[in-house]
Structure formats: structure tokens, C-alpha cells
Length: 248
Image (tube, rainbow, N blue to C red; front, top):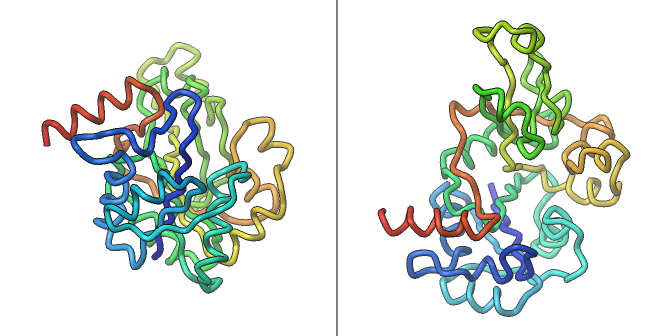
């Protein structure tokens, strides 16, 4: 597998986030270390910013410079795949540049899930939801799978609706799955995905992965036993991650 880490300098809540210091290293380097520990054949950082390029090259990473106008990390990865000349059947993992605590084993499992499912073009992960608060949180994306482990739908809504529990049976199981934002793609599929453009249900939910299902393609799901640690979206997240590496 190949891992591509999309990284941009500008962030609404944390400008310069990839270069924020985390235990004496840039946040991006911590993510890069997780990628390398997964056993990936090749790890590349895709960016449009020279500050990120210089920092990444300083810690020994391969960098692919991309256009600044990309609307999403997937679009940036699409350009990188073309520039790197990857063959259409190779597996590419999209590891976000703000996930310094993503377990390397989980990265491998998602890539292996795609490798073992020839009829899928994408693989991703989820974990069981055990509390009603998470189920009802629109920022916690839910996924419903079929009996063979393929995604039927992703939503910010509480799906499947636990009718018995909501009717007052507090001991009734929730049986819901929270999506983990880690993706593996077949390299040849990424260009098709980017060329399609957003679909109606993707725009309604603001969930890019729904574009795959809208066009009739399959997403294989790996169910992890527990959630990985959260990434870095806020200043509070950054402090939490700094504390983790100070204690490690």
C-alpha cells in the first residue's frame, strides 16, 4: 500500500496546524511516523505550501507539490496519484495530516480490507456506538452496513434508529456504528471520483463518501473493536495531543 498525507497550511481554527510543535516535532511529522509504522510501501506528503514542503523534507519525507485550488484532500490525493504514476490497481490510503494518534494497525487493516474485496473501490473503518449521546451527535457520522460488510449509507442522523431504546427500553442495544475517517482507495478509482463532482445526498449530509454510493460503487467496511484517539481540530485537541507525547 501507498499512504498519501494531504496537508494544507491554512486552517480556520488552527492556522499552520501541520507545523504546530508536538513534543519537539511538527504535528505533521507525528502523522508521518504513524504512516511509516504501518508498514506502507511508500509514504508521500501532498501539499501546496512551501513551508510544509520544507518542514517535511527536513524530517526525510517525500513531498508531492499540488495545486492550491483543491476543494478537498481527496482532490489533492488525486493529483498526487497522477504525478506519482501509480498503477490503477495499487492501494492508496488517505491519512489526514491532523491524525497523529491514528493506530498503524488500523491503517493496515483498512488497506487489507480493500485488498481482500475485489468488488470494492474504497474501504474505510468504523467502531460500535455504545451511548445515546454519540448516536444523536451530528458530528459523529454513522454508517449502516449490509450482511456482507459493505456500506449501505452514511449519515449524521442516528441510524439505524433504536426504536425500542427510544421508546423507553433503556437496556435495549443501540447496534449502531460510528464512521472513522480513514480511507483506502484503488488508485484508478480516485480520478473517477474527483471527476464526478458532488452528488445531492453528499451535499445534503456534507459527507464526501456518499458520492461513491450514489454512483453505485461499493465501500468495504472494517469494524474496529474501539475508537482510535481523536485527531486535531481545535486548540484543545492540540493540547491533548501534546500531553500525550509529553507522557510517552
